[in-house]
Structure formats: structure tokens, C-alpha cells
Amino acid sequence: NVLLWLRFLRLRLSPLALVALFALVLTSIPVIQNLSILQPFLLPACFIAGAAAVVVSRRLFLAGALLAVATVKPQICLLPMAWFALWVCSDWKRRRSLLLGFTITLAALVLASEWLLPGWLIRYPSILMAYAEYTRATSFLGTLLPSPLYWLVTILVLATVADFCWRVRRQPPDSAAFAIALSLVLTLTVLIVPAVVQPFNHILLLPAVLLAIRHWQELRQGNIVTRAATSLFCLCAFLPWLLAVVAVSKPLTPHTDWLLKMWSVPLAASMALPFAAFGFLIVLSRKGI
Image (cartoon, rainbow, N blue to C red; front, side, top):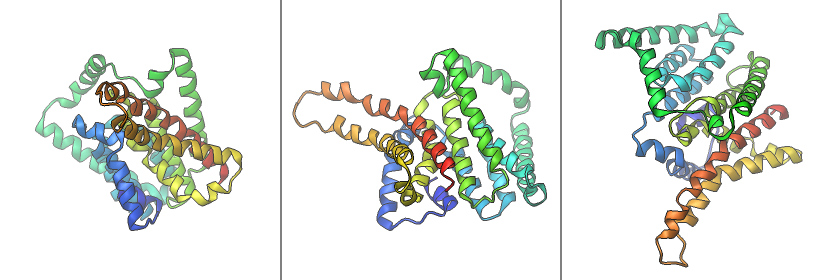
């Protein structure tokens, strides 16, 4: 995931910075949660990152194929697929091979799986309903907001992202606008797509973090709103690590109840990250980088 997003954003880091980035990602709450519960989320997330990376290299058929493989986790692919579909339709003659790669690969996957497990496609909707019933999965916004406010905020963020994507739909894949649009779509996925354990979807916020690193110099020279949004995003991104250090290394007391009281604090701090990422990306989109 890290290498593919770095390739997509054409971001070159020093060896020391790469080691630090890998260490931070590997010890982040989303990655630890995914690994501890054996959640296969990291694989489709990697295929989405791969699709983005090869789009920049103009290998659109391969990008479509990787996007189709990512549908093994369909709920996280819906919004990225919508963005890629809009982007393809805006320049059909030159970009249609992405849809061709997606269609052929998805058809092959469905036919092969139907051969291995006949009738699964017909039973799949009822299985999804049963899964949603016993897991009681809710969206990130639905967890934090009451029902009327949840729907209002959901419509607002959807309209904001849709408006930006529509305005930049003709941009080339190596442009900053394309990267911001895809990062916005992934952040929106974290906010509104239901999940059983909320923070493990936060790995989709990685391109937003890398965008902050890539445009750090320009952002530091921006106005007060730009600097404030960037600082808040960086604080929310690194706060869980700082609080985790405090939670496990308090030297002033020998009692273990300190850790029992503090273990959930880094997890709670990570809940602010999607909102900070969304605000940062909105500011970045208005800045015109």
C-alpha cells in the first residue's frame, strides 16, 4: 500500500524518511486492528492503490483489472469505482480501456466463482442482509451523529465531493486535482460506508497523509486557514502514537490499572482523523495546488 501510493503521487522520500513512514504505518491502529482480527481489508485496499499507481503510468486496462479484483470487498470499492467511471466517461475514446479491463476481469471472477460455488450469486443478497443484521455495522458518521444530523451531514459531504469530482473529471491522472479527488473519495468511503470496527478503514486515508507530505512547503506558505487545517490534520494523524506511548510507559506508578484505564485513549483519538482529513482535502482542493 505504501509503495503504491508513493508511486501514484510521485513522491520521493529519503531512505530514513521511508523507514520512518513504514514504521508508522505498520504500528498504526488501523493496520494493527486489521492484522489482529485477520481482516482481509488490507488486500483490496492494496488493489485500489495499485489501480491508482498504474493509471498514472497510463496502463488503463491493468488499472481496470486491479479495480475489479478489489471488489472482493465491494463496500469500499463503490465510491472509487464511481469516480473512475466518471473519469472514464469524460474522455471515453482515450480512457475506455479501463472499463474494458474492469468488465473482463470482473466477469472472469464471477464466472470462476460460480463454477466453484454454484448459486452463490443468487444467495449473496440474503447473506449480506444477515451479515448486516448480526454485526450491526454502522458508518463512521452514523456512530458519532444522531439520525437526522447524520443524514444531513452525509448528504452535505456527498454533494461536496461530487461537485469537486465533476469539476476535475477531465484532469489527467498525474495531476494534483486527480490525486485530491481520489483521496476525497476514499475519505468519504471511511466516513459513510458501514464497518464493523470503524478505525480499520482508516488505511484508506494514507494518500491524504502523503499529499500533506508532498505539498508541505506550499501549505506552510498558505493563509491561516490552510496552515490551521494542515496542522490539525497532522496532529490528528500523529496523536494516537503519542498517546499510545503515554499509555504504555508511565514511569510514576507500578500499578497496572493505569494501562487498563488508558488503552482506549489512542483509539478514541484516532476517531477525529477522518474529519480532519476531509477538512484538509477540502482546503487543498480550494487552494488549487
